[in-house]
Image (cartoon, rainbow, N blue to C red; front, side, top):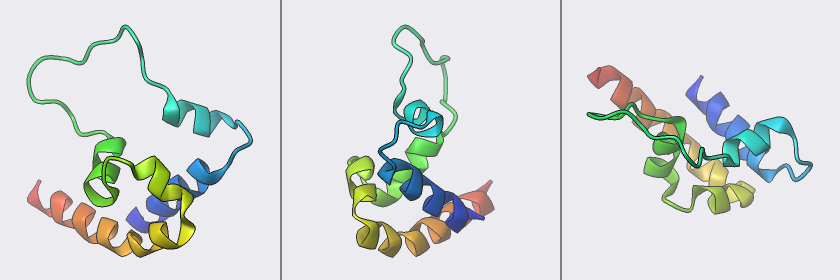
Length: 83
């Protein structure tokens, strides 16, 4: 399941047709604030742990993105096992 999420993210970010799913991925609320205390992990946080802070740029390189797929699945499984 984690590999499918990883693949979908790469596919979605490489798509330049202005689809809703791509637009929502790049959207950040300008006036919204997160709650106090420990923040819930976001999908983007998981991607940054594996691909680095420039994960959107990394996703444009299909070969490099594929190489990181297994690392993401392993890391995501380990985090889930800790919970």
